[in-house]
Amino acid sequence: MDENNPMSDPDDWEADLERRYPPTGQAKKTAAEFRNYQDSVRASVKEFYRLNHQYQTFDFVRQKRKQFLSLNQRRMGIWEAMEFLDTLVDDSDPDTELSQIEHLLQAAEAIRADGHPRWFILVGLIHDLGKILCLFGEPQWAVVGDTFPVGCAYSSTIVYHDFFRMNPDWGHPVYSTRLGVYRSQIGLEHVMMSWGHDEYLYHVTKAYLPMEAQYMIRYHSFYPGHRENAYQHLFSERDKQLFDWVRRFNPYDLYSKSDARPDVESLKPFYQDLIAEFFPSQLAW
Image (tube, rainbow, N blue to C red; front, side, top):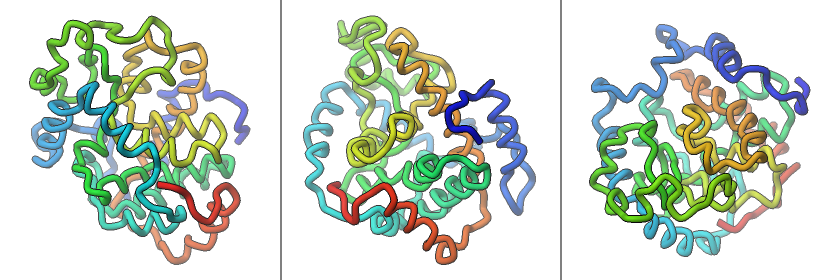
């Protein structure tokens, strides 16, 4: 596949991937059945979003950026980080209860099978590694789940939007307005997103990856932006172009999830070589 050709239609891309990567060992899921947050979802998912939407404030995000973006928690390599993360099951995710390393390998293998560039495969492998914040003592509501801008009004497209009514910023005279602290078309690099694993991993890895990969990592959980086209008034022209890559990545993150467990040991040599191609033996986390 030509990495320079933009995708034609994100909906067509997702429909094709959903057809080719249905969950194994169970009835095929339709696209509508993924990210299903209705009453049948695990109770932990709804409770997760209640906490997330109540406590992700503008001031909270500034505090967490100051705490973690100095990258002084520890030093470790990418595969070591994957093994470190492997005990975590994401409470915000209604589609899988596999360990994180299994989900990462599922996504990477689906990308690899479609002949994408090696950096694209690598994004599939590492995109959720920022979830190690949970293992640094952070609660899951401050690490995983859908992301969204803070410092401006919360879009009604955000899952469980009504929970934001408990957030102190809901009635703030500035933060509750459409633009909030920002100006029109300011560009997402100047917009603070809710705190979580996307932003954290972006800062850990950005020096080693192309811009398209950086956007995939930083915004893959920003579903209001790349699925609902919300917050377009904050996007720059560059954001709009690069979000094609975020949309290209998203179906692999979502539709590659299944109960079929990848053979970690047999895949490990290929992925260790791929990691070494882009990253040093240790990174600051």
